[in-house]
Length: 507
Length: 117
Image (cartoon, rainbow over all chains, first blue to last red; front, side):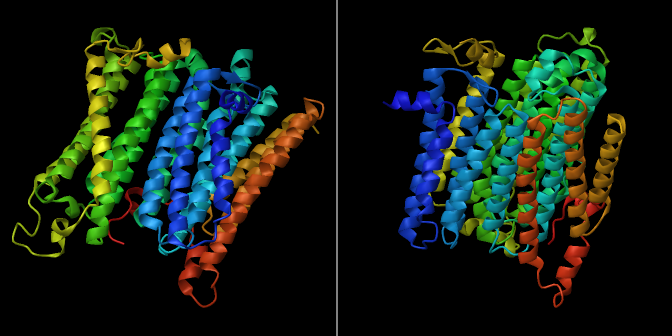
């Protein structure tokens, strides 16, 4: 029976599961009773888990699905899984920080609605559906962020700035689609690539406008102002919402241009490589310099997240320079997003607890954290060290290349990626070393900085952070085995393979 | 009237809108500039459909379905700004917010953010 339901609702199973939960929660929307709020948290979590199961089971049972509106393949399954996992963590943050909010149940409804919209973005392939789901997503995420900040008060102007910039990006995407439609009469990118009309200058102009719009949407340098201002002033759970719902939507939009980028790369390799490498270098270096300059933990995390967004561009730069193929780029982008999810959630949850305890987001909050809470500090160090996964990207880029055979674009990627890595390492070591330093109280300066000792972490926090540490350690082991070319199979499934995605695609 | 002329006109509108969004410093002007970009997209859809594709319904559907959520998004933002800064006459801070609202500034604070609020 379940199989027949899945076959009829393929590939919208996860959306339907979430929609059912939304409909049930609407009946409790105005309730302020605590037990009903707890019930809605359980309902939301159960619906997200059920959607996760439905997503994977559906694909395993029925395989790929493709129509003129949507495309549901292994890449989409993995992206939806990451989003649902991120949404579960966001639910944890929202519940921990907003359960007293009178609009709490409405906030949860908006959260599930945003997840539904982003799933639509992932599976859509038709221009119209991509655009509609993007607009619906932006509306729901705007409402979610504003609802979370109703009691915060200081961020209204910056919320407006942030979403006006996003509106500009969406409007530009609308214009870009109008130009592409006009020059080709096609309704999705695959048709354009297959027909080879992409060399038409008007189509190229449309693609460039789309690319600029996505760049603007992601608030990459030099457009980062509204993002940084908002992150400094918003409520605690708004930051994960922006990081793991808002930004992934932009990444998935960029992913829809994969085939187009690959096609353009075949025709004007050197120029597109130069553009991607320069942009990624600016993003990664500026992001890390910004993080080094600041003393606010919120801004440190915000800047580092921006610099990691630059890695997506670096992957496309590596593709253009001929280091990797399109499947590897898709795989690296997914790895990047996954590692960000497993590292930022626990690290940020520790930072939030310290900020709440101290009343300030100054970096002095984590000074001496190793002495005050050794267990969580060691976990935090392991999680921060996971950001070195960037080394694996460099290994994948350069393992088949001889330095003497490289041309100018290859060398540029190598040098710029290396410089970016040095800046990232400085930030990681800074965040680790500061935990070893003595706090102000231990130094004999009994000022306001001695709050770390009195901060109590809930038991659930310990479980939550330990869970992510275990995942990080497992990913680290897999990465090391992959670099050493050691093959490990589980049920004839190579879990350490470099061509994991290609392997899945062939199945 | 030729397609080239209409396309140039729509591109001009787009550039005008983009310039307005990036240059103007009050919320109303920025919203009007966004409208210019939407209108230029609409002109594109209609002109290409009329001149090249014999009035296909797809372009009309895209315009209609595309503009509804875009205007809904803008309405949400106008409503939010009204709720947040509606007391214009009595609170001078709100006037400064509405009239001093550039999206992107070339200032140190905007580039690096700030540590002290």
